Length: 59
Image (cartoon, rainbow, N blue to C red):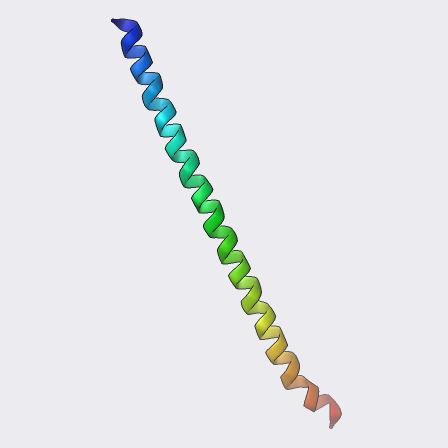
């Protein structure tokens, strides 16, 4: 009977670990997507500010 309880405990622990691992993977993907979005916005902002400065240099 004790072995069954041990096995049940291990099964629960492995299930919890699998859930945590899955959540971490999702978090990693979400974070990566946010990073790409920030980089894209930064690039866009740099291009806009760069274009605004070009006429100033010509004067």
